[in-house]
Length: 245
Image 1 (tube, rainbow, N blue to C red):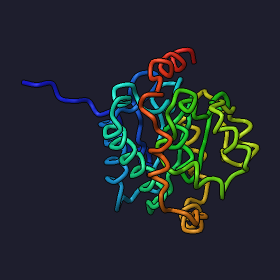
Image 2 (cartoon, one colour):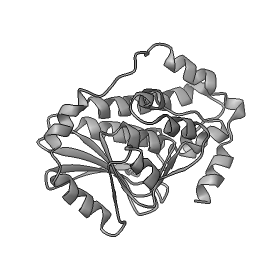
Image 3 (tube, rainbow, N blue to C red):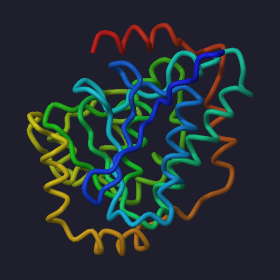
């Protein structure tokens, strides 16, 4: 009998909050099937009686460090296109979902992990978390349109610094209004859920419809693939960089 695949994203319920946990090693990187797990877990909450959805990472090292090496087929634009499509679906679902989606960033949020956090309605982070898209330095552009969209909602320096591939500390993003709350690492998830209970989630839900949308939606996918050059990608270099963190 073939072994049953273990889902890379698990779903649970804590009080009246749905908790989606990325669980894939200490880096919490997602391959194509893992991205599908996350997409399907979000869609499963349609019609839920929960008050909010939380996305977080397992362990204390990483929220999500992006896509794993197994899905970074550097020799195939077709394979990368599939990854791009599912990632776009995820961020689209998050932004259009009827429930507030909260990112509980328990460590590194890199590449798609950063895009995932920025797609949430609210970010709660540990003080030592770091954010960025270092994949740019190794030939990998962002997987979604979120970095185009956020220029309307956050300070320009966040966008400019992100494009360099540098990592940004949580306190700086908190000062910029990108992160809503910073909590200590001890008992982070429990304290974050307690904090959410004291927020008016109905107001957060109403604010989703008021979020500014970019005036340009055409040709962005084609721009993505103009930036992505398989011959220039350095997946081993990116993996080595992640291992140093």
